[in-house]
Structures are given as structure tokens and as C-alpha cells.
Image 1 (cartoon, rainbow, N blue to C red):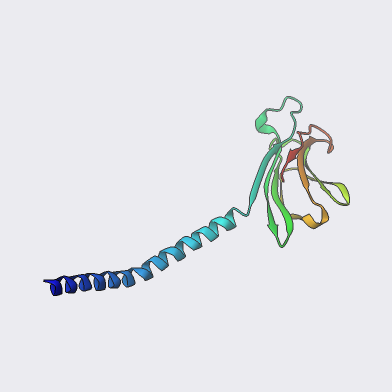
Image 2 (image 1 turned 120 degrees about the vertical axis):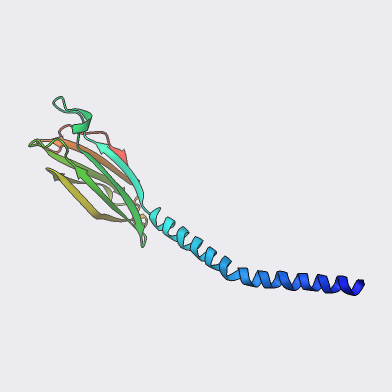
Length: 157
């Protein structure tokens, strides 16, 4: 009987080894698929979304008629890049303005863009932490000039 038990135990061990070898390629493929999914999720999460930021109310406008800006930032090769869209929704003759304000070791800076409809901002900035970049704010205004009906400053970074 002892010999029979040894043979059965050996057969069971051999069977489990064969099953393990057969399952290994499937497990590797599953792990590779999981790694690819994780990489695409990480790439998608490389975008840091912010907004929307709205203009102030003016001349009895409803919330649905206010101009707004929304976007995201990414980090590439040690630089921070900003992307977004400015929308002027009321179709009047006023313009919409988006203000960008940032701070680095050279001081505070501002940049203003305007539109009468929709403007897309692609890869604005290129700020580096090594230059002391530590703050980025956005404000949206609407009117005859860039100071009319402004919303509050919002942090984007």
C-alpha cells in the first residue's frame, strides 16, 4: 500500500505542476493586460482638471448666460502646461476675457486673452518649479473691457 500511496502522491504532484505550467501564460497575459490598463489610467490621470470659472453677473444676466473657462494642466519634462477653453455664451457684443496670474522667483505675472465666442488654449505656460513657480490663478470677465463683470480669482494649481 505504501507504494500505491507514493505513486498517487507523485501523480498528483505531476498533475499540479502541469496545470501550473499551462496556467502561467494565461496569468502573464492577464497581468500584461492589467499593466496596460494601469498605464493608460495613469496617462489619463496625468491631466489635472480645474474649473469652470465664471464671469460676474452683469446687466441682469442669468447664470446660463455667463462666460466661463475650464481646462486642465499637465506636467511634461519638469514643466507645467495649461490647456482650456473660454466660452462667451450670451452672444452680445461684449467680449469675454480670461486672466491668468502666476508667481515665480521673478515675481507676479498676468496675461489676458479675449474672445467673442470660444477660444481654445493649447499648451500655455511651460512654467518650471526650479524657477520658483508655485501659484496659478484664473479669473473670467465679460464686458466692454477686461475689468468689467469679473468673477473671483480661482486656484488652478
